[in-house]
Length: 321
Image (cartoon, rainbow, N blue to C red):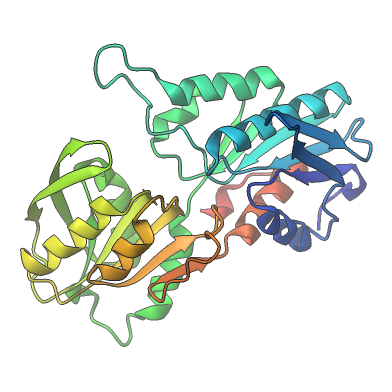
């Protein structure tokens, strides 16, 4: 599948090894042999068990929970490859953490997304491959090439297969942005699935808590699809779903988001919410022992495998959009 396949090496940290193995299967490669563990005091320890000299190396690591541990693993892996004379190092970060602080919202705030971008660059990465950054401007925080994949084509395929236009009147469906900040993302998705657009207006009181205020747009007696880039504690999403039913008069509500961070009470909230179905991509692995009949994960490892193939071959990734 890949030209000069003998020069490609794929390694992974501990964040999502199953995802990395699926990518390697799609590429027809073996996952690189390495040991990524911690010392007794918690320091990250990385040992590459095969040569990477002159190779095109791809390091697959989401910076999901525990975020600091996985980020440090990625940085140490990059450093190990650089010091082992890798030809090129691409950090494949399906979920890019620390992305919510992308600007100074108030005095003395950090811009953590820029800091992490600097750390990845300083460690020795030559380029980054990621999906659905929380804010598009984070692409400009990197001084190295960044390929930004979109999760929306996967969701478009899913919902057009679930609600085909030859059987369902898409005028009775509405894509809903759960907040004003996600309107552009939701509008692009609505255009692709040929559905209307609505917005849930909310006022956030403090971190991870919000108060839904109003529904902008006509959702009465319609099927709604909430669309966002990530779900953390699921408070905002579930409040939006309730507002669509109780305030807007929607018939039923589905939801989809690229990254299922799912912290704290998220699973319980989703189960207790009026959502019919909650769809995530598998950029973050599902937490063990937390099954949910409403939650479903779609596999985007093939998308990353194709992107890696294009990056290695020096060809455009535009066809992935």
